[in-house]
Image 1: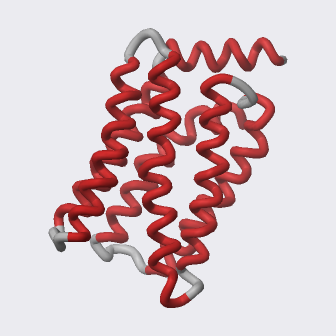
Image 2: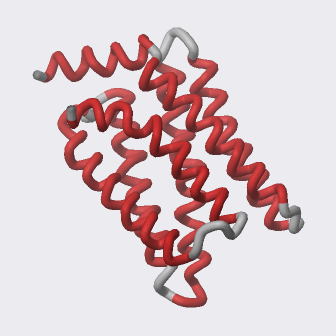
Image 3: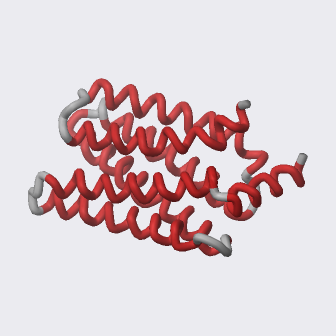
Length: 183
């Protein structure tokens, strides 16, 4: 059951996380709630990195393990941003842009390794980078819709890729084969 939670949990957690970030930008959630969300996310990421390490030592799974560990660091930095005063927004920005761009690395590697539906992963990587650019441009030119639209691109791209990874037969089967060979 724990393996299934690790395998399918991101299908729920990724869109939930980006929805939460969008809600924060729309000022629907408080900074205290965001701090708690960062702590919870860091805890989940640490648990996933530790428990998934034995299954994620090579190939595309190793790339994703590195993304998760790097994301853990970015998330902890983001959590610190809620507690350090004036430089807090820099730390929060590192976490936000980290989670916008880090998965793009995993998507590109996954796209290189799959023979079918690689376009999903390359498209998702593009959505991450483009979404980060739209987000930043929206902040720079003070377009109120820009940041949320950028978040939507990132969240949509990441959700599409994780749905394919979790339910698509090729990636899912190759992960299971790699895991079965080690057991």
